[in-house]
Length: 212
Image 1 (cartoon, rainbow, N blue to C red):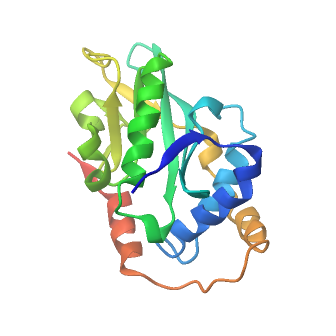
Image 2 (tube, rainbow, N blue to C red):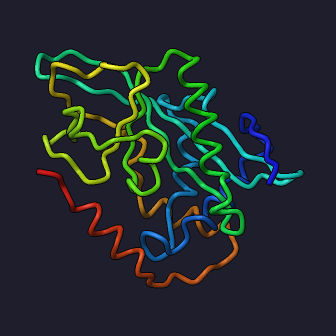
């Protein structure tokens, strides 16, 4: 399937929010808030405009990836700026066809060209280890509490970046959304039924799992 990748335009905003809603609805929780998250990230100071990308098939926007600034701090108090992507969204009918992988590969290439040193995300290792991500413990990169969550994943763009130190990862505060505001935002879209899916239990388990 042929796709092209380009920067998101203002005219894409609503379509991207709609496709994000479709991609995440009932996946991790009944309903979703990722479309609201995309909406508010664009105006945040941590938003990286050059890495805000859409995948296009024909004339249709079918996928989207957005990056935010983040950072790590070591035991000496030294800081390294990193970047974090998410949400990564693909319309359900185009999933498992390489669209998400293409967005990751293209954006990582741009990140390297832009001089960024590492990508750190929270995600499912089944989806991201194929792209070179490893668990944070492999680099001694923990969450702010010093734990090594199952889904804390690191991709070094500058090899050896984390050697010799222990690090704590801090994502952008923009990812901490107001659920009431997200629910209000969702009223702008066509009604959808909130339902239970087994993937919600899988997600809950993954969020609580840590490596020892």
